[in-house]
Length: 364
Image (tube, rainbow, N blue to C red; front, side):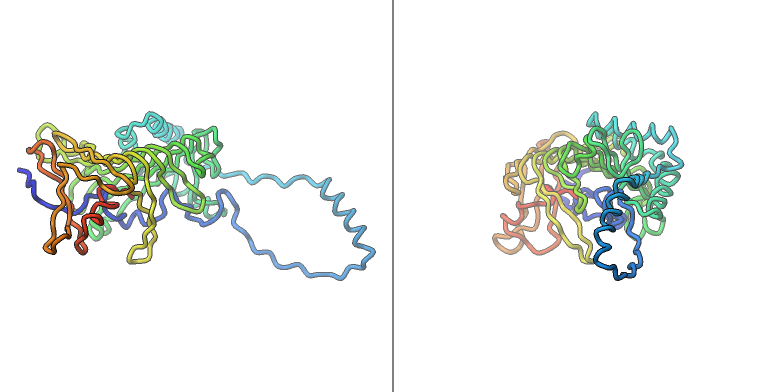
């Protein structure tokens, strides 16, 4: 039976990034260097020689002659992964097709497929180590034909990142066994200026509670920018959060992702610093619609200038102090669904503070 008055902390989609996501994701250049640029090698300063004045003119003529006759330096060939088999190419091509089709469940099926783990550890991890050793940026894309640090605007750009938590980390961090992130830009070479794309991340596998196939994932489809010196930014589009909340219903498989929340419109980006000094970015829906999905219905709420516009389905929960609030519940139109509640873990808030950039309108 559903406890329709029970408050719970925000779900995974509203929680701070888990420790495993503290590593730079696809929106960051882990090397700190420009894309595709070779790392600089310090060169000992040349000894200066005294040259008679009359020799400068002759030296200039020789210099021009050499400059005109010397061949242009050969372009440095960007290395390709040795283990990039036809099977792996087909796998990435399938992800690109799912992104182009704007099919979140297909993207998730591929991102959480065992192939993600195999592709990463057999191909991408050794390849990224090679790039690092040769001085290239870690920031590498698949453009539908080959791996590249600078995709052509006429090609898509797919960045793939995967990882696995140890059994100790699963217990200590209360996290999942696997996590996959991928970023797709339709016009790869324009990603720094904004282009249509997909940003997906998932947590799945065995958890600290020994549950399997808890497929929680978030996906953004819309216009976004990835500058070389900053994190991924959303502009406008739709962000969706899926979770296996079929528990308790015989007709819904517990491992089938169900759409839980949608944020549609324009987004506002804000940077925060965690207690350990780590910077992270939060996207808030600034203007648009927040849709909360339940088993038997949904609630649509307008967001204007970052603030929730209250309706009959939203109930702010008063705190003990007059005029302050401790949280808010969203009630389903069908009483059988009950509600979804959130409580502020910190000090009580005014109603204005409670509604502005609320966790229900936030993404990571």
